[in-house]
Image 1 (cartoon, helix red, strand yellow):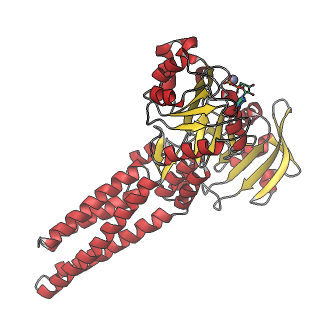
Image 2 (cartoon, protein in one colour):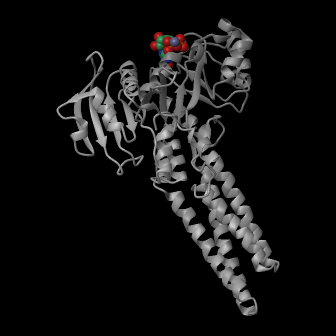
Image 3 (cartoon, rainbow, N blue to C red):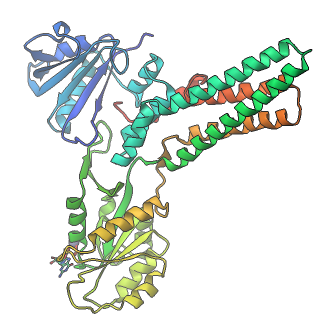
Length: 460
Ligand code: GDP
Ligand code: ZN
């Protein structure tokens, strides 16, 4: 297939400081050579080498960035086209500058997901692998990425291919039967074979559906807000969470989101400490912006950490805040337990409702932090706390296809059991085969492909 050479910024996971400008296509190496100065021209270097040099603006000869450039020639690449990756260590401004230079020298800006789309269209990966890549790119936790990785390795594809193979074998048997209708015992044998094999396929699809619902992946992290009166220890709590847990700083390059967001990974649960409208850490939000607006702002959060002071009795503003967040997912943290008790715990329970989890902490003694982290993990994995962006490794499209496939194989089984002529059952079997094929992209209409790939992040 023939394509333009595309270019885009792509940031590797967990390494916010390094960004890559990636080019793919026939002209990738030529375009890179126009803006690169190193020991050798890139056109002359071996495939799969990394080359040290500088990016220069060919019009002014200004040095833009010191870079390492990876050159990978087709077909042994992700897209099966020539790929050049320009590794920049400078900030987002320089990276954008390098991207612009590739564009002004002949590359076209890649659409979101276009690299992966090419890998798919050039036959490098199948559709379920492409989708797993998308989930992998977006997943922010080790737990999540492991599940996505396995799928990239084609586990799902292998399973589905096996199921389709079994269906083909049943169909072959059915063909024999149709060719020799006069032999009753053939029909009987075919029926038996069909029933046994179809049952096996149905069971496999069911267990796939089950792993599908367990393989939840969170793409963006739970947006988390810490609230409470001034001086109760919110900042200390925040710092503790960040220090304690590997903070993942992401720069989503090439998009309008140039703000840094902080991710902390709490026992496999990615929390996104949100800084929208300054509500991440809010001293008396109700006082500041009013009940209605604070309710609105806080309802956008997936999780609210409500901090109280063990050393101080409840006040009117505590009750106000409790009222504002009463329908949200809240963990109450009673902090400063190293000091003497002035807070009535029973009154707190009454205020927030008995179902709201309460954790006692002291930032001075460093106590209770483990319990808080466990509480967050439990709420998440029990599904109490979730977010809109939650998706499945076997994503919604897979699940719906697998459900349909399960239905049509069940139809085939029912028909066989009730003695429906075998050539009628063929239709249900073929349908199952097609539906399973759609999961791995072997019978997908073009429109669907475009729709799928447009969901990909930029630069992948
Ligand atoms: P914020 O206003 O809610 O963000 O509270 P800060 O985190 O800024 O803390 C206010 C004060 O309380 C600071 O002097 C902290 O050192 C102190 N502090 C925070 N947590 C604790 C705690 O668990 N015990 C004690 N004794 N002091 C704490
Ligand atoms: Zn503070």
